[in-house]
Amino acid sequence: MNQTNKRFAKRSILAGALLGLTALGAHAQSNVQVYGLIDMSVGSTKNPGGQSITGVDSGKMTTSYFGFSGTEDLGGGLSAQFRHESFMRADVGEAGRFGGDPFFARTSSVSLAHKDYGTLSFGRNTTQLFVSTLMFNAFGDSFGYSPSIRHYFAGGQGAVTGDTGWNDAISYASPSLGGLRFGASSAMKEGSNGGNWSAGLSYAGGPLAVTAVHQTVKKDGATPVQDTETTQFGASWDFGVLKAFLQYGEVKNETTNNKTDITGLGARVPLGAGAFVAQYGTMDPRVGAERKTLSLGYLHNLSRRTELYGVVMSDKVDGLSSGGGYSLGIRHRF
Image 1 (tube, helix red, strand yellow):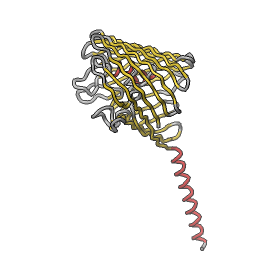
Image 2: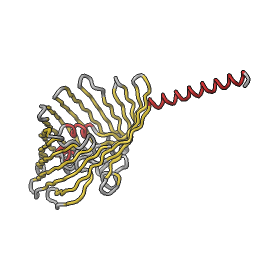
Image 3: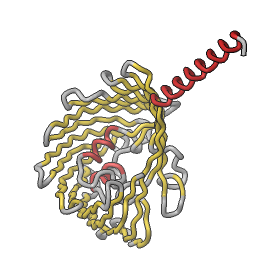
Image 4: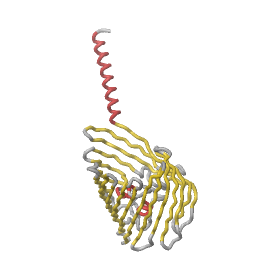
């Protein structure tokens, strides 16, 4: 091999090594994750005034879902992120919470995040009110058994409008500033629909956590649109042997000119490999029947990702036959 060829070979090897290092660096700065949760149970449910239905259900404690997300490190504390998440009905093998639900109804967004300045997201995002509601009650985000979730988001007339996630949204979430966080969201006005907006402030430090959220909805996907304003306050205190939850909120439906007070009181008691949970809530409209819901359950951890649960519920609306239900189920995270 002559000197020219030797120099060319050395340069080729060096270039290949640099390309390999660049690829490894890019891989180290980016990542994509696949994750989700499957919740399956057997039990019985009876809505107030309705008929009892017994069978296998998906999502009684947490709506089953799957998703994938990614992050790219842009340097200087800045990163680009995306998140796409789809609800699913694992009992029938179909996507969505119900027929016709958008495929990525849980979340579909792209974000810019900075460690010092917070995160700005664009797309379909979970509302601050929904996050506040699930964090400050003992049953979390359970549409099947959390009195708070059922009253705010599935309570019929008097409940919040606009779903648990907003389309065409711009959302900001601040970093933690000594335990204090701020967030704001806006769903842009389209055509004859109005726009939505919300703002929330929370604090978590030691055993105490508190929150305050306000949202206005003028775009809810229904015809005709029902405009609502909701204000909610929440608090929790961890005593060690017991974590107590308190919520109060008011939903004002400007379309029907009705106001509804929603209160909640709950507790989570660590017990063995799991916890006993209890939540009581009332829904008291100015016009209409009062609703009272009580749920009790035990959650048993088989591992960090797999949990068994048993739950019973009493659900009463004035003037209707009593409702309620029970479930024995499993939640698995992946």
